[in-house]
Length: 384
Image (cartoon, rainbow, N blue to C red; front, side, top):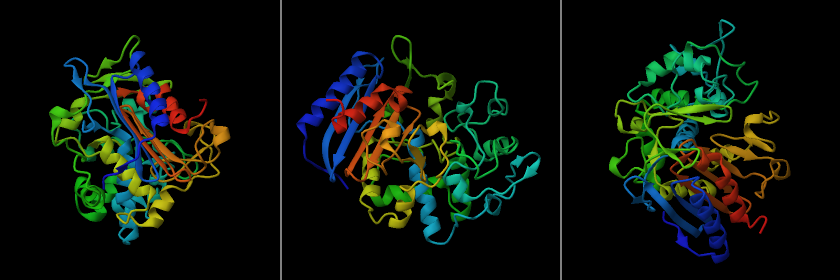
């Protein structure tokens, strides 16, 4: 499902400036950017290094640990089970995971598949709490660390903690998609990687994507934001973010014992993920159109959680733009976007028929730093 090329030289010049600035100011080590409009690739750029210390150049086919870009892929797989009547959005988690019994104020409360999809389940993430918080104390993994940890053990740790709020009452970004992945496995009676391969990877020809790298030596080396320049990641590195921070273990992706995190566990290339985004935008028959429509529709209104930012809601697997003026972005209402903790961001603007993926090897700059804003403005010509 390769995209035809139709260059836009003015757009290319703008994104070149944004990427050059990020490299010159040492905010990123390397990255791959792809921009499509009307189904044609109007800009494709590969910049910097996949590994700074060995001077390995970044290439279009460099695979990355894609972190939360995993979420919309697993969401599609789960919604496929819903379309076939295997799962229901109103199924309670206890139906599929009877031994998983998180509590609120000492009472087991029902959580639904819909609430997992919308992050209104009552769960959280360790990286969104300060060090020493309950998720840290229980050693709950965000799916980015602890190589070799099993899903069963991580769910046990998660269930040992009280829910953060009554399910359905609040949005809070969380391990919900990891729990959803466990349900997908149970409902389909197959490992999550097999379900994703059949539902998404195979139909779209995403040959470089999966939960296990086919060529580990080619994976982009991950780096963390640093004072003077990005710092090469090692297992156990803690990277501050938004008053809290995440612990990373790059070797997790290389350990076959690591559980397939539905929220953060995949690897893949920019081209593969762009194919996936375009398939969603164009309603490719690999997924039911009504499922994609639901993913792209705000599912949490009237909730307005600060974590999403002004003007944003949330669908299934991604944020949905409610009000561009409040959000301060040049995108159109209905735009969906998200990112990945290793340094990635993406969006699809259905009204403008635009899809964009930016994979960098620098956290958190590539996900939520100035480069994301600069690329958005460059694509729309905002402020130029």
